[in-house]
Amino acid sequence: MSHYENLSSYCFWSKALGTVEVSDVDPVVKINTKFKIGREEKVVSAGSCFAQRISSYLANNGFNYKIYESAHPILGEDTAKQFNYNIYSARYGNIYTARQLLQLFKRAFGLFEHKSDYWIDKKNNFVDPFRPFIQPNGFNSSEEVVLDRVQHLKCVREMFQDMDYFIFTLGLTECWISNEDGVAYPICPDVVSNNTPSFSFKNFTVEEVVDDISEFNELLLKINKNAKIVISVSPVPLTATAIDQHVLVSNTYSKAVLRVACEDIVKRHDNVCYFPSFEIIDGSFNMGVYFDKNKRTINSLGVSHVMRVLAESYLTQQDNKQSEPRKPIDDNSFRDLQKITDLICDEVVYDAENKNSLKEGT
Amino acid sequence: MGNKFFDRIFKKKVIGMGQSEKIVICIGHSHIEALRQAYINREDQFKFKYKFARYQGSNKILMDETLMPLEDFYKSLQRERCDLLLCLGGNAHNNLAITKIYNDYKFLLDGEMYGEPNSQFIPIGQIEYRLMSQGGWPEVIEEYKRIRENHKGRIYNLISTPPIESNEFIETNAGPLKELIGKYGVMNSSVRLGMWKLNKKLTERIVSELEIKTLPLPNEIFNARGFLHESILINDPTHAGGKFGEHILESFEKGAEI
Image 1 (cartoon, each protein chain N blue to C red):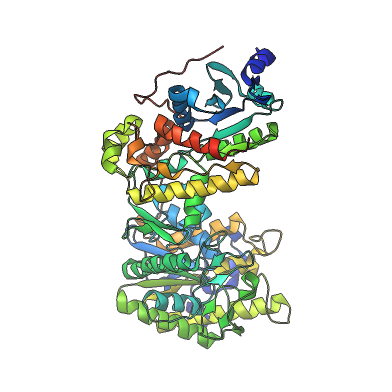
Image 2: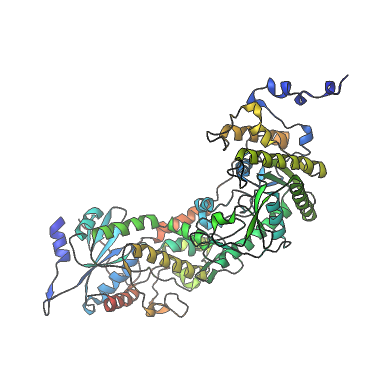
């Protein structure tokens, strides 16, 4: 009897993919799911662009997706959206690399010192180098950048201390690092600003990604001993590579490094498991059907396939059903706020001095 | 109506050494009531002749005692050489800063912090975005543009009344806000002041782009901390009355080009 005779059907391409409808492919098997997430358990997320799709789904489909950094309710839903609240559990913007995640954690807990507090962008606005697109049109002053960041990091601290599950989507290995303090930026600084500290290009290796995530996990467990992590690799290809080679070649390196790193990380840490969103979207079995015409962005069909598998794999059976979508912040109080306009914007001044009441003419 | 009405309204009376009496049309929403009240109280003491046009909904205006289509009113401005004194909107900031519907907040404006020290910090760009998208601001901007398009003469803009400092005064003179203030209480006075300053700054920026001059506010209307002076309060949480209007018109007459 050969080794293969006792293996499950999902181990065979012909049975797991060749004869299965594209939309029915489910690459998550028991070994990938070390845990199930209960409806009440607190889930947070971060990562690259694709992570935004995941957080939006989690928030609306049976997971207790927690937001730790909300817009002040006086701003209303539209302003909150404009200023990038509720995209992730805190307002950190996209986190593309493992190093960025590690540094976010360390900054939040005072374990990482950085020198540059702000950049001035090409329109002369003040920008937070750690999340350069978080505030459309920038901040008004360097003081404002720092004040908002202090508040943001307080929310990040609370998030890591309080959450049960952290879903993190690794996006890139290519990164730009500050030469003065080692900060890993989410974007090449000279795209945003003409006046930044010197920086260098860095393309992370498997070992570096593993080390960064491992260090992050160890620090996380020190402040939240029951925390669990679901890691994945973003299926969205690189927009551009900084290396003088074809972007497809760089993309393959990047995704391969991240994928291998995930495998290693999962083996090392009992509280971490891997979710194969990359495989669902990028697997040759689907013949590219999950990409938009630009061959890069993921269409809604692909997103729903990934999310269905995610829910089926990680939500406990009884919880795997559609839940109430997250309520917008508009509530009775907000309606009362709107009333003020009607009450004071153009009412007749009824003071004692108002001798002549207004009369309608013809 | 039409031309005859406007001829009567805008006709310039010849006075003294061949000088025309200057006519100023004050256009706006509720805040122009203070000017109208001042003029009713002391008409003979002002150098200029004032007319008052107050918006009534989105397409009508009450010019003195005559209600007319806004379109007709704007067209009439094309023919007239009188000056305009505007005070449009002016309460948008109060929506966010007068009742304590939500928790306190703080923000930084021109290097100064406003609001409760231990509350949530809001970057000013977010407040600005929110402020400008509500409280009639989008509509008011359109009206400013239409006025500018229809009137080639001098246009001045009056910033709406500075905030009242005393929470207790606002509570006891809540007027139309009585129910909401009773339910939620009054916001920190520092927030009121900061939001008024922000609204003023935005108003100045918008009118300046339309070549509308902002009327400087006379010192007499402020107390030492920059709020509306206690001597000119009326029983209203957001508006001022005739005394305020007198200070404004006197200041306007001193500073306006004749």
